[in-house]
Image (cartoon, rainbow, N blue to C red):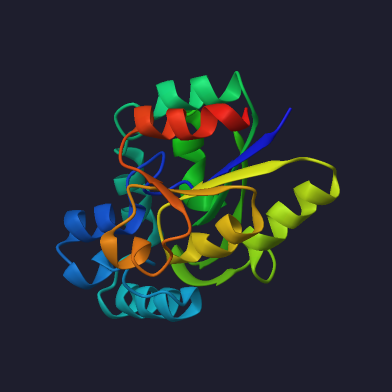
Length: 198
């Protein structure tokens, strides 16, 4: 059985930081890896804003608790699990994602850790360098054929390493730079692209 690696935010659930931006009224937090491709730069920006605007972890956690999977995501995931081994490979954090994983039936999740002190998010620890590409390489070393789906710049290394990689609802500024990847705009279209690889 082949293995399907899925990004989380933008593929199965809403963008967490965009939801936090909307809930707090802090427009700068709407930036994602679609806007700032270098993850460390983006997280530095986010942590600085949280510190300056006095936003604690509990505030972010309350926002996440109100989020639901994207419409159609649970059905798509059920479809995928009947055809593939499924792993969610994300640049989110376990402290953010656990509530959302419960709503998705607890798929395997590989992501990062937050550093929280006195209720404040003060830093983060990456699982490893180039984690998405590394995860696909590791699965391939276990003799899996890996298919990967993502929506942004930070997914490109995973898509490059997979065979094949597919964009899902990726913005034009991303797909234009990486025309080698097929694109799907709906879960139905994504299923059609993935079916031959199941």
